[in-house]
Image (tube, rainbow, N blue to C red; front, side):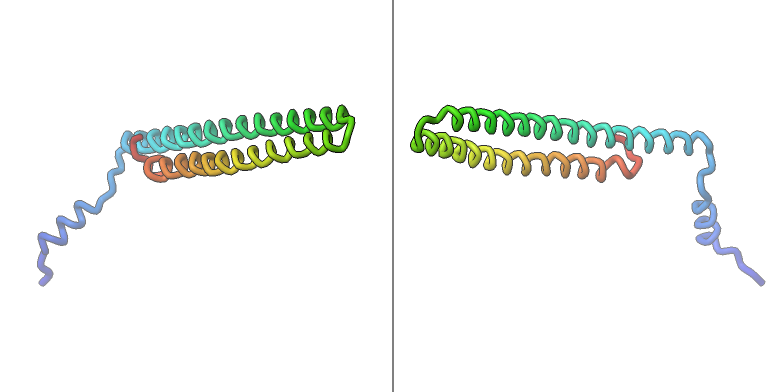
Length: 126
């Protein structure tokens, strides 16, 4: 004779999924909102980084233009060497700045990714 186990019956009742359409809608809405927030934050970070690097490229163009103007205006080898030395020094400064910006930009991207991993992908509230 089969005996009803109260623990098995309770487990079977609690294992039934909640098929309430409102719950599905709410979970879906929260998930979409979380993903939209994550994407917006990520794309804003990328846009900000792109603007910074675009400005950096313009600075490089200006520096090169100034260097060629000084080189063209040089009347002696020492003048040309001074212009070249000035250009090389500024380029080294810009490379150091680039390194700092690259690290900072990587941190921005990683931060946006970490925030999305902690809240955006789980469908949880942010």
